[in-house]
Image (cartoon, rainbow, N blue to C red; front, side, top):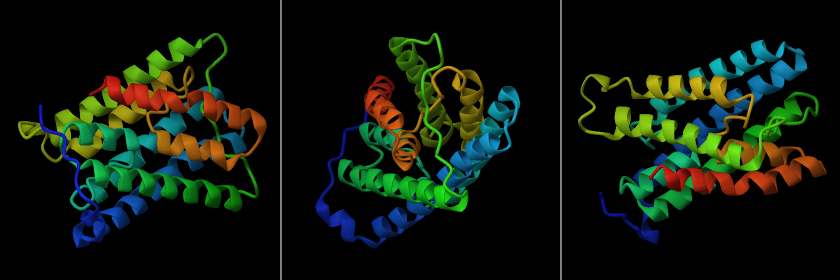
Length: 229
């Protein structure tokens, strides 16, 4: 297993780190804007539940593939704090830079959700909640499996130097697995897989039930990410 690298504060002033943070911010912003925006659009159009789920899954699959590819050679195109954590534990990014990435990703997600709320005339951003009949533990286990499949795909098709014929296809395949996971788990746990998008989507709507939902679900992403490492 690769050794975890702590890094130093000097990284924050290095040109390559600053460039990576700018690109990561842009990619995460565009990812959340398209993904959350698609969910809001289906709500606005009062789409059939199955059609809406498919539309959201397709939107996420497409924007993930494009944004990961767009940011890959500069920031790595993480667009997801869970992916950043997985890569940090694998020794592919320093802990200090990971913290900068997390702040970057959360700020980008916040801005995307705030802008979406403004552009849609005050529509609330969607929150991921458990479906009726799905218990707390079941929801955690669902998110663990979905997040594992995401990180497994990232490592197998992008990070692993022995990826062979998958070389260059990583972003597309990552988008595929995100779309598939939303189709599989969206109706049960919300198929979140991304704390950045979820936390700030919840924050975007300040109603009590959404705030409580945020508090109840916040720990899952940490557990799911650790299980995957």
